[in-house]
Image 1 (spheres, one colour):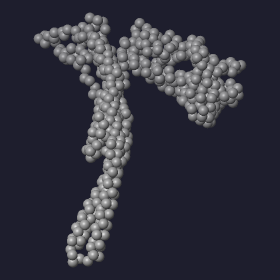
Image 2 (cartoon, helix red, strand yellow):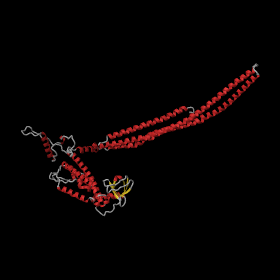
Image 3 (cartoon, one colour):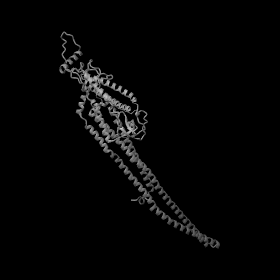
Image 4 (cartoon, one colour):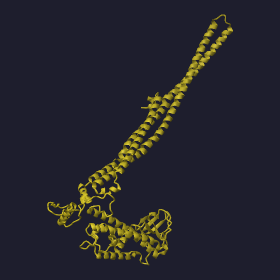
Length: 569
């Protein structure tokens, strides 16, 4: 069905219909835009909700319970879920809104062109019709004038009183009018034929072509609407797999909950270490004897019963009846029950040992750098690192004193508090092992690393053993750089300078952005990488200033070398 043949006389209605179609496209575009805003707002609210219920720093202990971890995993999955709704909004904006907005403008321009051509053709046929009407009225007027002139001539010719000259004049006038009527008839006939041709061309060629173009435009618009509606559904369909994974993650988190394990964690969290109180003895007030104070009697009787039953008297005050300190918690965690206090002290000692290990790593790195400066004075002044080494030594000493203090409190909890006659100072477990023991051993219970006498006090052998362990370590540090005839270190990879580095300090190497260098020593944890430009230029550059590319063989060799040196030390 063609609009050109079926709707040849519906120009105005087609104009209204096509305008309504464009308005509908703009209406649908607005609908998708509002849907996109809803998705963004929903995603924002979901993200805010997830953020609101994320565990705070003070609630980190919750992570030990599987149901808390499951909830936190659900929050993370919900955050990813919100991200998918943001993806929906972005895709709707880019694939539907932007596309339809641009297409609506194109359709408006095309429609304007088609209907402009239609109006122009309509105006031309109307002008031809007016011209035809003008020719027709002229022919009619000339025919009437010719009839009147003929009648006047016949009247004059019949009147005997009229002169012959007047009759001749009337006859000539009638002939002239008849000639004018004949000319008008010929003109009218000719223009009528022309008009019919134009009208036929207008209604069977020009208008059908214009209407056909408008029909094609309208069908394309409808097809575009269908594609947009399909895209509207596909945008949601594309995120379903990821949404499904988020929901699966929530389900897996829920299935990972272990009630038995959580109930056991409650024991670990709140176990006091006390034993249940014994029976309360009967106090006979009927006898003539000195009455005891109720609280002292209660405490002594329970303590005695406990000693008789278990031989492990812990306290003369029952823990459930101790008043809790509402102020700031003491440093030695004495406000906690013995078991909880032991765990807190052990965790504190482990943290301090980790800090000591970090300081020692920095000290070792600076010591190696100083020895390199001593062997190669052109690379830097060995004395330039002394202030930092002194600062690190002070930090280690403070940390060791701190560790010793907490270890003393831990020994008190564990029933091995050193007596006053014992040596007042004891070296930290981490300090006595240093790099010869893997860092993971620092997490063991410090009580297991102590040597104690039968009465629970420390022995002299322990302290002397610690000192003997510390001194060789200090003496042996830096063996790697003791050989004065050390050969040039081999390259273990390359690096590219990401930023310019001026290298004002001695021992450093100035580099320019984009420069390629050889790596001869990897970062030891102090933030510096040793590089070489050529046989005469080498030094240290900040690790964050370069991108390192280690050779695979070099990585294995370097790792083996680390292990070897660690075992050798």
